[in-house]
Image (cartoon, rainbow, N blue to C red):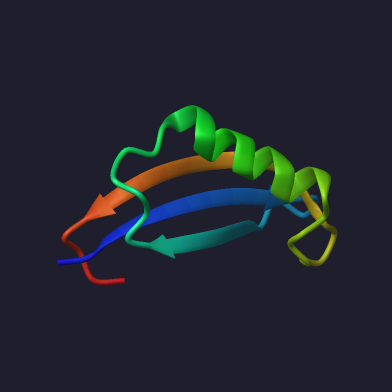
Length: 66
C-alpha cells in the first residue's frame, strides 16, 4: 500500500492547487513540510492562473489509492 503526502495551496482566485508526493520519508516532520511549502510559494515554483498565494493544508494518506 502506498503513502502520499498532499500539500494544498490556494491561488488568488481561491482555486485549490495540490501537489502529491508518493511515499514520502517516514520520519518527515510538519516543520519540514511547511518549509517546503514556504519555498514553493517564495520561489514561484507552481504556475497557476493568478499565482499561488498561500498554504491551505497538508496531510498524509496511508494505504489509499491516488
